[in-house]
Image 1 (cartoon, rainbow, N blue to C red):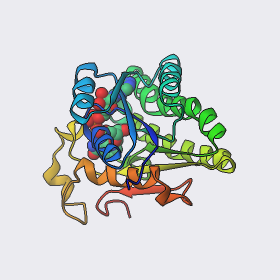
Image 2 (cartoon, rainbow, N blue to C red):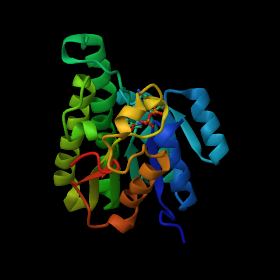
Image 3 (tube, rainbow, N blue to C red):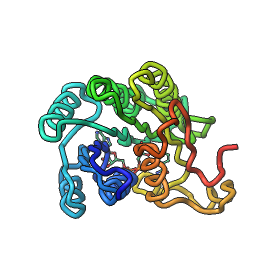
Image 4 (cartoon, helix red, strand yellow):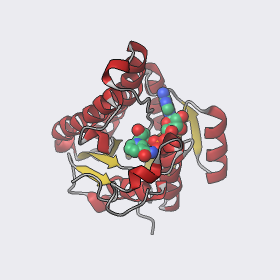
Length: 239
Ligand SMILES: NC(=O)c1ccc[n+]([C@@H]2O[C@H](COP(=O)([O-])OP(=O)(O)OC[C@H]3O[C@@H](n4cnc5c(N)ncnc54)[C@H](O)[C@@H]3O)[C@@H](O)[C@H]2O)c1
C-alpha cells in the first residue's frame, strides 16, 4: 500500500532539484504525478525517466495555470495534492535590487503560488479534500543577507499559506508551508557552502529527498490534522 495510492498530484518546478525528488517519491507511493516547469527539455527527460507526466508551464501566468488545471482534471478527474515548488533565487541587497529583479521574483515566487492555490481550490472544495504544500524557505522565517526580493516572496508564501488554510479548512483542504534550509540543488551550486554549514547544527546541507519526505507527509493522509503550519527542513538552522 502506497501512502498516496489513488491520488493525483501536481508538482511545479519538477524538472530538477527538489521538485524532481518529490515527483519520484510521490510516484513510488502510488500517486499519479504531473510535473510542470519552464524547462521543457529537462522536464520531458525527468518525466520520461520517472514514468510520469510533464506539462510546459510558467507559474507566473494565470492563463497557463488554468490550462494546466483543466488538462489534469480532464484526464484524471481530480487533484488531490499541489506542491507549489517552482522558484527562483536572485541574490541582491536592498540597494542593488532592481525593479526587474523585484518584479520577476514576485511574479514567480509569490504570484505563482497565489495563482496555483486559486486555480486548484475550486476542484479541491468540490472533492471535499485536498492538500496544498507551498515551498517557502528559512528566508521566509528570518532575515537573510542579500535576499530583499527573495525573502519578501518567501515571507509572503508563509502568510498566504496560513490565509488559505483558514479559508479552505472547512472544506477539508489543508495548506502548509515547507521551509528548507541549505539543499543540494542547482539553486545553491555557487554558494560558499563551507561557511554556511558551520551555522547549521547538523553540520551539512540536505539532499532534495530529505525535503521530499516532508512534502510526502503533508500531501498524504498521514498529516490529516495538520494545516496552516510551517515545517522547517533545515538541519536546525532556524532557532
Ligand atoms: N536549494 C535550496 O537550498 C532552497 C532553500 C530554500 C528554499 N528553496 C526553494 O525550493 C524550491 C525548489 O528549488 P530547488 O532548490 O529545487 O532549485 P532548482 O533551481 O533546482 O529548481 C527550481 C525549479 O523551478 C523551475 N522554475 C523556475 N521558474 C519557473 C516558472 N516561472 N515556472 C515554472 N517553473 C519554474 C526551474 O526551472 C527549476 O526546475 C524553490 O521554491 C526554492 O526557492 C530552495
